[in-house]
Length: 489
Image (tube, rainbow, N blue to C red; front, side):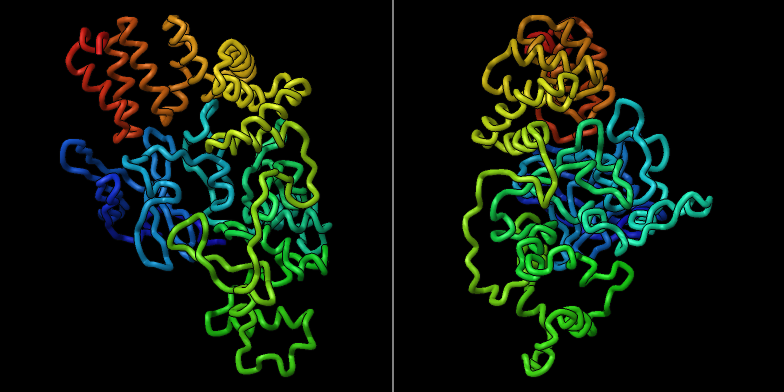
């Protein structure tokens, strides 16, 4: 965990590859004391450039990626290095894209599980940092043991994880190792509010779907899989991640089989004599490594700990979300979780999200997350007046809400009110230049109202943060032909 982040040059893995679908040739290399990512696609849709890499993320047990800044806004590289296959390839979710996504935002929650002493972004932004994005490389001692400064000052003891109540103990691991289908921050809280000794469920609700742990295993699915294992179900709170894993010890490869066999025999002592003495590696049979269902070139250990993994039926995944473990979740958290699923095109999830959020908004009338998601659901079913009202209410609470600003501006522009749309879009794009669609809408509205030069600058900003964004390139080409072309194209 201590090796999960640091300066890019210190963790550089040089290499190059061409992504067939987009035609982009990527190269990661050293230039003196600087690490660099270059990209190039020749031909009709040519694009070329490079960025200086600032940080690496990932211990390279599974892989590594790199972060860079544009005007102090922090982004993730569109490519990853995958350690098992020893190849460079697209980051998860990007393999099928036909363009280069250079605007993958890295915010506090992204950094939370890979770095320590994470900085606050500038007011109104999610990923613009005044100085360094984090103060300590990797995951430090305080992530599990609490702030040392408080202990030194005599205001408390360091946290001893095994001494915590089971929910707080397990939260130390699940804060980063439980992804689920959706993670929803509680009202007024964020993941970064979590502190050792807290229950994670007080900060976020993690949702899973029925039987998901018995089907495909994702890269961050260990906790879900362990929860359905016979070992965990029979042991209850006596068993945790710490039963088998010591965060301070990583056994050498040659010693792993014996090390983990010892962990198994803590409970299964009767198997110590006569049970496959010729093959003492318990995990090879009962916790095999299988291909990750959500990240290519990656394997994951099956933590269901099955007696006969190959013969075990996978079952059918349900369609209902449930809060993981014993965490409580109301209409707000559940509705936002279904709304997350709806963003992926699931109509049933959209219907359930709308039903739940219509109830939640009565209890949380000033919650920008509830208002924005409910507005989006209404807009998706062409209830424009209702969506507009909800977006306006969301922005009255949080003027920096980028989704509300983007979509409200679209509604206003389509109604023939470009000046009002500009008033909404301008500050939103200044704080979120990664929002490429917003920037293009803003540039077009500027052009229509005669602000040709401002439109040019806006398109330049769009393409600086996302140079392969085709609508931005098209508007930029129209602007290059002059004010008249800009207003008529």
